[in-house]
Length: 270
Ligand code: ATR
Image (cartoon, rainbow, N blue to C red; front, top):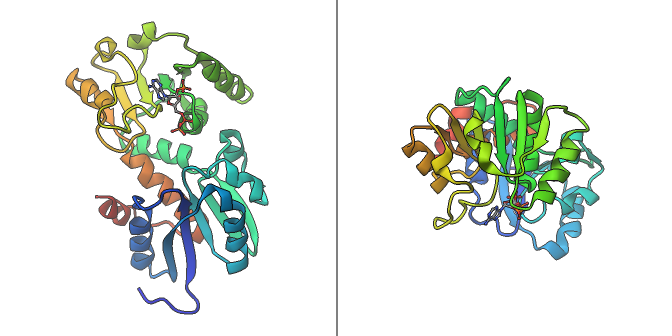
């Protein structure tokens, strides 16, 4: 990779960002395609987010990935937000076109691509999403378009009800599941809670109620206790690695207009 005075910069901002593997994925793809871009990571404290966005404009940074804790707060500093990101209430990708910053969210579409790739077809299926936070909101929006019926369960029922209410503006196949008694009747169960981020976390539901023939999906990108227990019961499982990969592919397309080589992303991830 040769950095010149023409090289365009894309960056991830977050706090922390040190663990991010996005620089590896995107730089490998830029190199592979011979694109004169470089991807770097900036640790941005919450108190200086507005200044960081001004910096993006001032320096002509071509685009951003945005991660915790800025996905919501960055929206106020952007010129436009696409409808999906607006529904999700969160932006994970920013594109700078001649100083105009647009906000997008590739998490939901990335998740759907990972299901496709894993051969998991949710059309006409009964899909249960566990959790009603930011991650759930992103995937539920896209699942609502495709699933036969979409159920949302959350520890805090009020939050699930609010998400169902918001989704019902666009979809008529979404309902709140007040308890998990019916989990055995679902075709696909998605863990969109933060349970599993820590090794010691228990699964987000009683896995003894799962049955063979169901599919268990986790947004967390490794084998969580949920996936381990589901797999032991004979369920098909999918972790969040594919979502991480595909949200990156979609962001790359937004910045460059080019499709990155997925295998290069996958190698960098591995
Ligand atoms: P994210 O952006 O990762 O979705 P979030 O918005 O903080 O993070 O949402 C976390 C989700 O995990 C929520 O659905 C949360 O449930 P509550 O709304 O009841 O807080 C869920 N969650 C976190 N810890 C949990 C736990 N110990 N048991 C059950 N659900 C939990």
